[in-house]
Image (cartoon, rainbow, N blue to C red; front, side, top):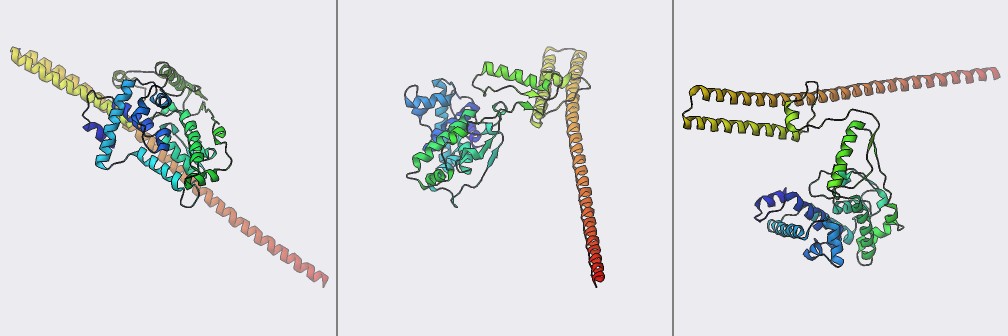
Length: 397
């Protein structure tokens, strides 16, 4: 939110693309292991270098960008840092860097990491700084951190994750602990608690989950084909992994343009929209309606200027009104269908929840009856045993 606030007020010409700059800042300039463990963002020399030791940092972090693009991104970064300083703001990368530096310096309050195990889903939406925080949460021991993700499903702005980033973070954190253990008590305590070295080797366990239980083979085939196109056109966009396979067969999905989806869908088809996609579709239809209104006004003005006959202008009016009415009706119908589908899914979910609650009550009632029957049988057995012992006593007498 703060970056978009900064971006709206940035006066720069030419102005680069917003998401590109945010990714360079969050994932590389401030959120990479180089800046994380130094406690400072990458310097301009490190980020732009083409030769020497600093070039290794820039080449690894810049993802094939030209020097001109990196120069632009760094200028935006300097303006952004000045904006944060002037307004006494900090962002997520600042918080993570400060947290890591403090733990390495002072350790944890009670002398031990706050978690024994951490399980992380959607790891592709995390920077190296975020990963370092999670590693420290388990005492820097990579064998206690379990991560799962898919770079093809990344949705977080400002993150350019690769699975190699996770290995690099584990390796660099180990080096930092060993290098600082002699002078910082936090690093010394973490290194001692981590035990035997060798986390870098154990962290190489990478399990590829390629069996998909959520989508059938038709959908997965289409998705895999799209990913092949992405890998061919943008080799560095996502990690190239083994294609998913489905456990169930299914029809191949049909790809259509917005116009076809919103206007020419067969009556038996069911459309599933994310709320933001539905809003975007409604906005597009609304934009077309506004364009129709502009065309209407233009036609009226031209008709008045040219002194056109009243009946001709009337026919234009009727045609434009009909077009506008058709578009409006189609938009309303699609919105109602989407809302009805969502309502049906919610009702089905509520019904399943009610059935589960009823079944649980019945199970609890049966368990209670079983316990009561068990107590009765035990009492009967004790009573029979007492009668037998009394009978044996009488026989002995």
